Image 1 (cartoon, rainbow over the protein chains, first blue to last red):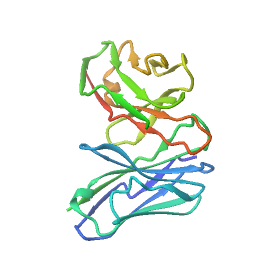
Image 2: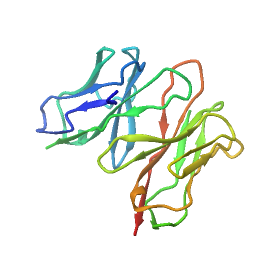
Image 3: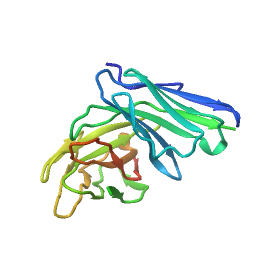
Image 4: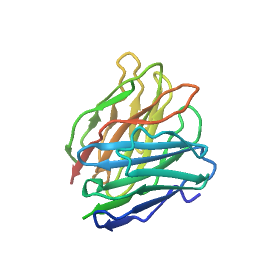
Length: 114
Length: 114
């Protein structure tokens, strides 16, 4: 398996524009996570899915953020409208549903909102 | 709730020095414990893990022992290399029958000079 695949790797957009980040989890994994990493806040869990169903989105900072998982092999994180403070590295991760299971991370999308 | 506390960095060492990065946790029950490493420009990857008390996880010369009595999981390496320069994250995953997510510490940057 190629691992967790995220696209794009880098995204630069203007304030107010819509941004869509994409993730393909490892085949067979039950969980999918979206994290945001900044210098100030470290690694934050935004939302996670189990079997394509959103379980906890309490980490989503505002209504401008939304995430979907239409099938087991694809998820999106959308920001509309984007703001400069959304600039961060966004990671997608997936794991199996079992105790002690590790999470496998993608390489991240570096988002810059100008 | 669950939490992980790591020593703040950066930790600056010379090559071949001994490394310790402290990690303590708060959790109900007996969680699984992990150390992840993030090299520059990359996502997090699992370095080692331990799933029960007194277990020792080890990989690439790194090791950590699950200490229930002190709720700690300190990372050690006898002789660091320049290539070990990275950010290290301690994390826990609660053992329960429900959904499982990782709780991360804030990360500790390690800088190794030749």
